[in-house]
Length: 251
Image (cartoon, rainbow, N blue to C red; front, side, top):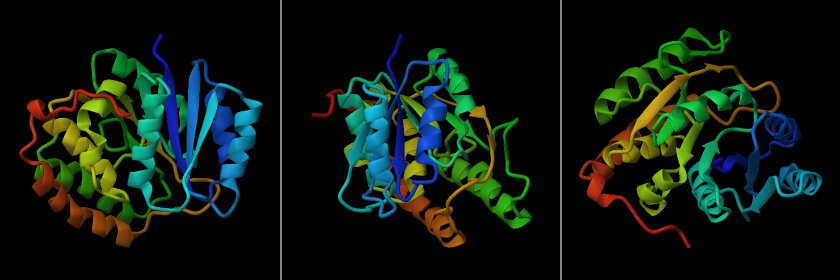
């Protein structure tokens, strides 16, 4: 049985971290959690430490000294998960917009021979919160189903999705040192590099509700900036191929 570790980056998620941790640990899988906290001023890191004591051997906490963005947090978390012996590594948010019930589908799809599986809002059968405005729905749909998909020429309907499962060999092969993006374009860069390196990518449809507690860190400015930075991602990695996969584990 592969060791499955869920990497959850946090910044001011004190309202959610206990609930999401318990929801994940109550699933009928032997899951391990790695909380990557960017020195949250609301005490999220300290709550995670308490949870780690309550669930010894199942929750680890990686404390970072400052808030440096989503990309560096995930890269640090992925490297730590590999060091901790994880075979399958899931990335997800703490706010329940990424619902734990889909983890079974992600693991099953990865088991069928894929290298990374994306929990997709825009794949056939997926959907987003019905309370989203028409503008927000159209912007997100266009950015993923049309703009990023065709600009980068990748078989992915939801390149900005932050809910994914990776094989450890895939994350090693990507060479996380070459991924430079911060913010939400980090997700696009990871998907693009995986495709350019010839890894097998699949999607499973999910319903994506808005968070119930806490404040969203996404706004229109961030979305527009991410759209522009897709061009940088393409220029940086368009010459990658299978021969550029990394073979050595991180130390």
